[in-house]
Length: 269
Length: 271
Image (tube, rainbow over all chains, first blue to last red; front, side, top):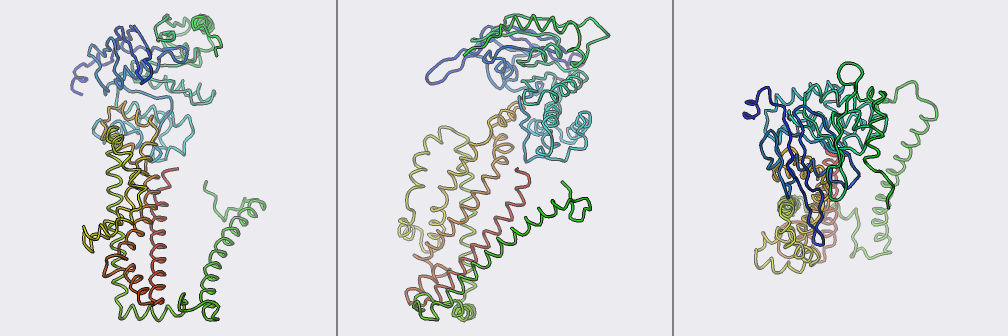
């Protein structure tokens, strides 16, 4: 914690992947999930990784989060090698995985409890974030009383309570219906930007990647490797449009066509 | 969610629907009560009409004087108390061992692989065959606990461990993203997430322990309801045997109610 405080203004973290590879071993086979991935994410940048299923994009997040170790290369966060789970990194999974036996507030305090942070402060922070997400009145409720979208927002609060500088999002909207998804992405991008996080989003949704992030990294399959990178820039207006506005802009379609070709989507058996 | 009975806006159909639910509940309860009354009535009437030999079955109205006599002269409370204490201690120990061993199995895949076949065999083994051995090894008192735990604990371990393994691995992954240690995963995810399994294990263990305690008392005790049953049957005092069996039934009801109460208190958070 002290080290993070010492970093002061530069507390926003940069991520570096240097020739990262990951192989899985099973008794009958050796599977190369990703290979030779080199990538830099600037502090405060919002980068998305897209690619077909099986391209190892979720594995990359596990590696950055330190819950899996690469079998080749190394990963640095602000110049320090990742050797295990790091309190500076928050990880939001595909589903909320809220614990049904904990109230929403207690769910949000899980990370703080595990990391041994002062619970009084964490509780205040959680309540503040919950009310920012429109969940203020639901702090004492239980997960089953909330809709899918509300649950996913609660999961975001749980990720942010420990005040990570890097937030990893693993298809965090994939379990939601289309309308909820659009509404939630606006909310979540808004909160993450306000908290000035460095963000890596994994998705297979091209539109989501374009409308939300500063840079789209396209991954190819087996073993996962970087095919191309696209910087997303919208000319109109001041600053970045919200995801919903972005979808209405002329650039959106151009990027969409380019990425669609890049992904080389075709139906396979 | 918060519809009250006095709410004026209820449609006639809805009132009828709720009336139907209530009637069905009452009907089930009435049939249950009627079944108990019927069994008691047959038990009373058949021996009295000499359709069955009253020496073999006794009958409810004959049990009452026996019950009072045992209560006053036969230390019935002490016997019932002894069985209850044995069952309670056996139960607490079985659950504690069950949770402890299941945690160890969860903790280390190697420990699980080593112990798995032994657990399965031990569980299948008829533990009643061990009663004489336990009597010789542990003496008359402790052998009761020994047999009660031996009968219950393997099923308890296997059931709780299965519950631990059934926890969604993504919940564990989530805890690990926050840097949780194995101990923290156990304490914050696996144990609280297994409460429904633990309740099911509670029910099963309570029943098995009571079996073990009574069997243990058959062999060795100088007190307890099992002792009364064996002693009564050896002297062909069917009144004593039947009174003791009835008390065991009452004890089972109490255990059922206790577990039911715990289940209701906890289940609200686990749907």
